[in-house]
Length: 171
Ligand code: OFO
Image 1 (cartoon, rainbow, N blue to C red):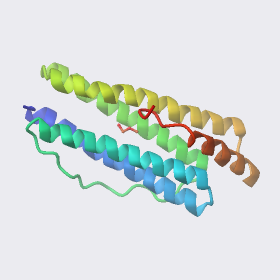
Image 2: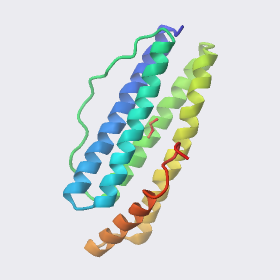
Image 3: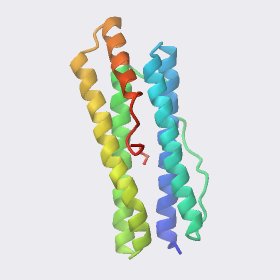
Image 4: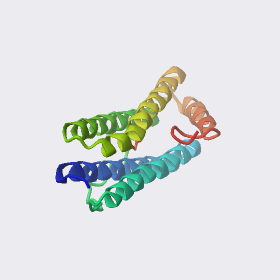
């Protein structure tokens, strides 16, 4: 049985996962408008991954006697300064999610909720991988150095190669 405090923290995390999925959906849509097909597919794929993270949490909350709530959250940005800016925003978002997971891990220990502590270990590992994943993409984009449409074409092509291998957590 979840304590009210842990249940609330997990529901807040559900909201953060929904926001993450929305932001990647929005980035995917923006990329499509910019004709960045691979980047659009990349963000749409990650949108799906975030929805799975959300579902996993909701299922856990209900299974443990709580009530998983569908959150009302603000709309994500719809415009991005550049492809690089979008990936930097994605990286920042992942860092925020990592911090939030860390706080719930601490809370689960403080309240001696070892079941939730164990459940959250999947998220701890996932976040570590995802942060590294987005950091490597930001680094690659910086290396390519997008100065014109040619640079953008190569960056989108490099992102396309990532679609050939599973995302973090799917290997
Ligand atoms: Fe991108 O991570 Fe969810 O948890």
